[in-house]
Image 1 (tube, rainbow over the protein chains, first blue to last red):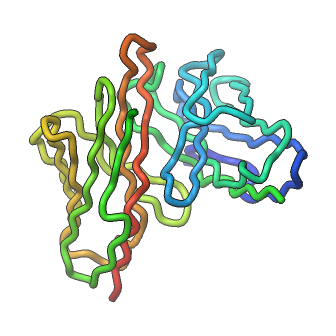
Image 2 (cartoon, one colour; image 1 turned 30 degrees about the horizontal axis):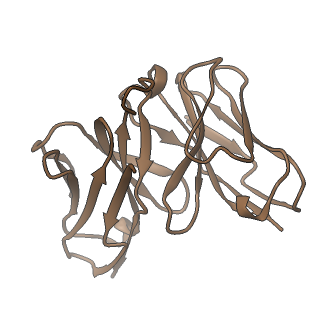
Length: 115
Length: 116
């Protein structure tokens, strides 16, 4: 039972490069999320998708874009990476539309360093 | 401003000790409070609390919510080295007059270290 799968696990980029973080879940969840985790700041919501075909901004969306490709997959794109985007990125999913009342389940994270 | 504050930020104990982790919150239209355990990778779900005064238990872990005083505690009894982790508190809330989506706001986490 894979749950939430994120790729890649690690990535090093140069300032200005672009890349896409991939996330897929096999739990048939409607809602998916992208967070970043920085030391001493907990997890902060970047973007979320309350259901297939919808996306919306979270707390820290600047510098990112997302695509809900289908019900299973939700990708996060950095168009022009900046050192301030160095972080650990987590994808999560949950049952129910619009976040629902169920807990979120997390992937193992992508550790991204931008030089 | 909506916020979730955890205390202490770090805690070092010995096996067998009992620990209490705290989470206080100020959010608009509270819906639920969740506790997660994070070891090296993904946060894993522990408890979700929606009602005051009802204790949730799972083995040596238990948690309770006080919606009047706006806080929750997570207790771990007879700690083991495997309990060493970051414990995250998150609050689901809905913005006043906004969408019905329930956003999660996380606290900074409490780093628990259990020595043999």
